[in-house]
Image 1: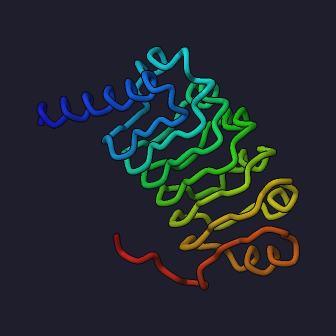
Image 2: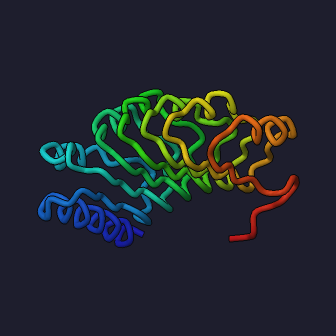
Length: 184
């Protein structure tokens, strides 16, 4: 077990170093078995955080993200958090004023993360395969850049299904009522 942990830590360190050394705008820490965002990474990336525009933390074991994560990487354009155990976002997600796409699919959201409705550049929201019942349709309809929201395989209430279509000017993807996600 210690050997596997050591390999995972080495993999994260290698990926972070690649980002710093190459001057890349991408930090890819997908499938690294992370349960939280490593605090040491903030220090290693401190000189390049403004140039990081895409972070992938997909398919880890994250239960939450800190406000420090959101405020440190405030220049993000894309954030991939699919396949974790997230159930909410910190309020500081509202600092991501340049964010265009966020993938929160296959997490554990029961409530729609309403902070996302304050992001002026947000074009795509993916919340597929969560447990969301209600959606702030009016707030979503007021978002200036929103093109698509994916809510497939969420137990959306009937009211959302009826109210949303006439109010929205973007694509709202929904599964048929009662549809279940395919097994992994």
